[in-house]
Length: 365
Image (cartoon, rainbow, N blue to C red; front, side, top):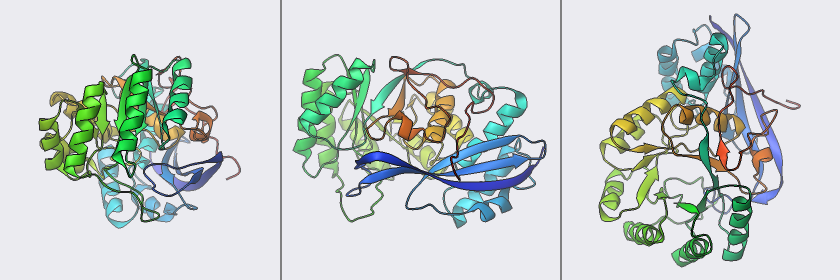
């Protein structure tokens, strides 16, 4: 089998309003945009991949074709070396690997999770928020998610005043004592469209970590810059709450540095943006050997979410991120798919059709 063509589609879906993602300070997001890569082969099998995008997209179809056309999609090592070269010259290409796994699965008649050694198991999903909200709004949100069957919610921190973060954390914890809570500080990276948003000092991160630990939070995510391996290791030594991160690293070498430096209790690579589908599974396996938990980041689009879910189902991941911050709801999130991936009483499982197991809807592209 050989790759015969690569087609790029820019896909865009207008939200029913807007929200302000904490990782894009000062920017109201009113669309969900994606770059969809369609990989064709000489036997007619087609695979799809998608990465998050913005502001009308960025085109790299012609350049990517140079690294893919003529190659056997089963030879993942060779293709990955080409993607590593592409990464030096252009935008991150790690999402492309999911299209190859989609092809391999379709060719074998097996879902990707089975190729990775997994089973179609249910995983508890946590409702992942995406913006800063006041106490009353956030309490109302949490109440809705609990009524839908979710057993866990992740709050977003990182306001200008840490006291505002802690006030929300305390109130949600007080009102929902049986709910599992996580917190994401979004200090690891930011897309600074405007020059807003602060970064915590180590002392601030330590204070928040200790206070959340006292409240019984499951983990604190990205309280420091993503390359501050020594700071992460030091923070782990000084607090008992689990420290998570690694969602937006660039390649497996950064993730391995985190593991080598004992920087994390929970590693969270997103195969859409951080390292690729197969490499994410490799990192999950390395983490397990090192006594580090794995649970992927999945806040991109429906195809990225499904790809990460296949990996999670082939690991011992306890939780799976379910992005849900209206108007960024499952329909808006999964607009690339014929049908959104819906939770069942707060649990999710991967599609069991061959490949990634989903049908792509490119609309009027």
